[in-house]
Every structure is written in structure tokens, then in C-alpha cells.
Length: 323
Image (cartoon, rainbow, N blue to C red; front, top):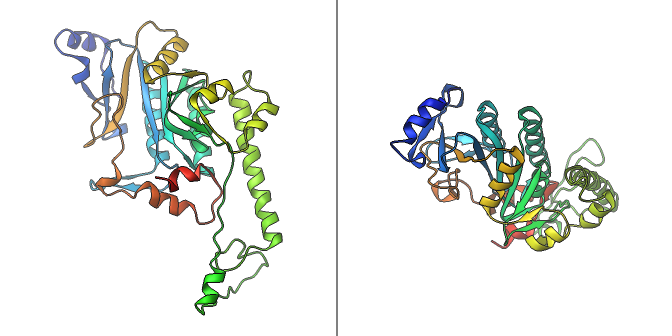
């Protein structure tokens, strides 16, 4: 991949603002463009977004592009990894969480990036960074929460909806032909039996134990395992409450997260950069780099309905239903 040589950057710096320079990132990352949103230094802090419900579903826009949050997130990390000028990464999180596996993949990829690139990674929480959103942030070196952030919700949820009573009232009967007594366990067409409940609860408890272990590792030196287990009852926290509970390291704004990243990287000045895929545009550090639902993508509520069949989720579900 080709990046602008230092001499060229310095030369351009004398005749135009860095905020107007788009740098195509080469055939390996076709369609991606690097956008400078603040600063004029050679060293960079890359801002990578993680927004919305965390699923591995491909999202389709009116431009015909399809990619999941996992694909987009990993691609942007790879761009940052291959650029020697990137000295730190800020992951900007605005998510109520989502699927257990998707959350875990994103966390794994972020940790693997840190280990390979050897640069600091700072989470910047926006409006909500709950459940799976917090799970991913546990893979960062530091966490900065916006003053109005809602976070926490360290727990697991799986919704079971039974239509059995309704179907009986309207004279509809569903019969499952199965091999294996529990094959239709958690089906909406029959009541949840006590043995089914115990088996499903065991699955949920294992997912919860993994969540706790991820937070214990991420907050090592700041929270004991016992303290994490106390906090991991699904409750939500304001930014100041999360700071008092040591779930986050600082309350501040995006610039504070970038400053944390710069200080951890040990560099004097940095330039903020983001990666966008055309025809989308990044105009400033608060621009979104994903096509919105109004342009043809499914809404967050639609995604919530997809999740709430019987899926075990790291998800703050009340947030979605209240939107």
C-alpha cells in the first residue's frame, strides 16, 4: 500500500490545508480514502468507528455495497496497521452491543491488532457503549467516556417469545417432527419447559462468565475479579458512575481520547485521520463513515427484531426498544 512520502506531505503543507487532502490507499484497500480531519503532524492517530447494533449481517446501500461491521472494522484496522505513521488508534464506540459472537470477534481482532502493531488503542465512548460495546472496549489500553455516555450493561440476554397461547386461541396447532427430545427447545410455538429453561440458562451463564473474564483481563490493575463480578449484573452506568466504578479511565471528549492516545504513544504532535469508502465522505472527526438507514439500509429496530428471535446477546435491549 502506498502512503504519501514525508517530503511530499511537507511540500503540500506549505500550499494547502491538510484538512483538504484525500489520500487514496491503493489497490489492496480499493475504495478507501484517508481523510485528515485535524492537525498537520506527520505522526497520525487513526479514528475507527464502531456504531450501531453489532451483527455480522452484510448491510446493503443504494450504492450496491455490502459489508458487515466486522468486515469494515477489520479492514480499517489493517489500513492503520500497514501505515508506519499511525502511532495510535482511537476506537469511537456508539453501540448498545449485539450478538455474542460478533462482539467477541471484534474484541479478538482489536486485541490481535494491538499485539501486532504495538501501538496504544484508546476507546472513545459516545452516546452509548453498553454490553457488547463495552466488551469490545475491554480490548483497549484506555477508555474515555463522553460526559453523557451510558455504559455498562455487563450481562447476557436471550429473549423467548411463546406464541403457543395465541395460536391455541385462533385454532392453529404446530407440530414439530423431530429426532432428539430437545431439538425444538426455545421454539416460539411451544411453552418453555423447566428442563429447557435449565439448559438454556447454562448456555447464558457460560456466555456471562466469558464476558466477566474479558472485563477482568481488560481492567487488570484497576478492578479485581470480585469487583467485576459485582458490577456485572447488567446494570447501566452514567459516565461519572463508570469512572467512580473504574470501568472507564477518564470522562472527556473525543479530543481527550486522542490526547490519551498521543501521550501513550509518546509523540509530540499528531494528525487525526479517518478512513472512508467512497462515495461516502468524511468531513470532520464527528462524521459517520457508514451509510445511514435513510439511504436504504435496515433500521436499528429491524436489526433488533433480527436479534430477538432466540439469540444469546451481549445487548442492552431496552435501548433499542425505546428508540
